[in-house]
Length: 250
Image: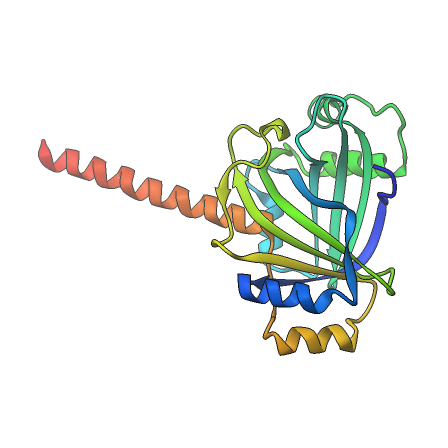
């Protein structure tokens, strides 16, 4: 995918929109931004974590510094489809992303089997250190969604994305399964991310204010994890209730 950058430094602001807000905003954005050349894309991710979910547990505490490791493809991959291995860090509200790319199967061999990449780099060494530092790190959850990305017409630093059909799963952690899993958003909801180099423009701030669109804190992996833990708790409650019923019956 030509044009994809390997290093990012930016501020990411998130907003949860209903269908009416989304339609109104898209109309207001027409003079400011346009859909990029990729149109709508399915983005598939595998997030890596320790057996006790150290990374996402720490992230949910909203520390000053946090980091994640994920494997990403754009669309359902074949063995040789270009895949991205990314370290995403956030420090004092600024997001830093560093990534390398290689074929999907090569990426799995690298992450799961420790096979050295064909072209080692500074970023691959950082990924190596990350995986050594977090003991037992392994695939933890698949997060997938459909994205429409927009770029600023006059402001090259402006990027806006809208994500729908955001789903999580803990089984079948292969990106070849596509965008499958349990829904995170409610029907009609859109997760908007405003990606900027510095402060939001007054024009954009006015548009969001007029449409009553408010900034929110939202992590796709974080929400998938909390949904998963809620399921586990409910499952254990039902299991314990059945055990109690059995004991009372005998």
